[in-house]
Length: 314
Image 1 (cartoon, helix red, strand yellow):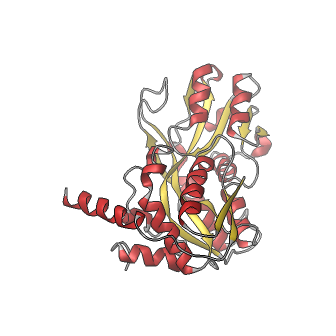
Image 2 (cartoon, helix red, strand yellow):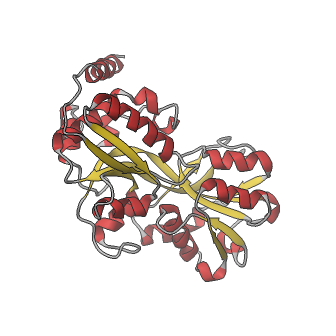
Image 3 (cartoon, one colour):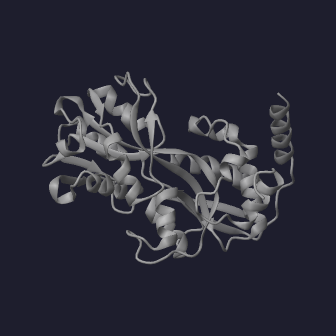
């Protein structure tokens, strides 16, 4: 009770802070594919920041986990969303990154991401090996889920040469292929329940591939991969928990962004969580301590200052 009162009081105090003056500037923010949750979250953050930080405009751009990290590092964007596993790959210069990224900082963890392997039930796909020779709807290169798809195939002793990879620009387009019978499986990395999977379940009987047999091999590929269950009844027809691969979604920014601006952005995000949780209920109950958890990505000084003030970082 006391903790809840303190958080409510802190949120009210943040919201009451004066608008920050800033030199007029448009900040580019890379999001994700249409049908994913990053696009609407970015729209909500855009409204919050533009209404409360004088002189700052946010331009949202399409993107994906790998592309966003590269975009910020290469100066094509100032803000974006990332996935812990691929952001760390970027910092280490691991594939699919051509070199180490040096200008990307963390603003805070947001919620767990689930890499999901969804199939149409009548295809009788129960393991990754059953996808051999089959058409799979996959996100474009530059999307974290596309990288994880390569890894899950590798964990099963396969590669793209063993399947018919069908790269789609959006979750909506991928679902369309399964609805029409042009693909038997769909891989995606997003929060749960994913609206695209709900859409597919409204038209076809679906099944998830249990990824438990591949967890150890996936961990060897990237230490950030963990196994986590999609709880029973998250989706229609899904009556039991299904283990999938889990990692973290987080907010990233150019390390060159001014400390005061980033401090205010993070402050405003926490002051307005009630505008974000209806978009993605996985963010409900997000605390500064959870957002500040170390995922191997350097925290921006402005964000670190906010979390220190909340007692969430040393």
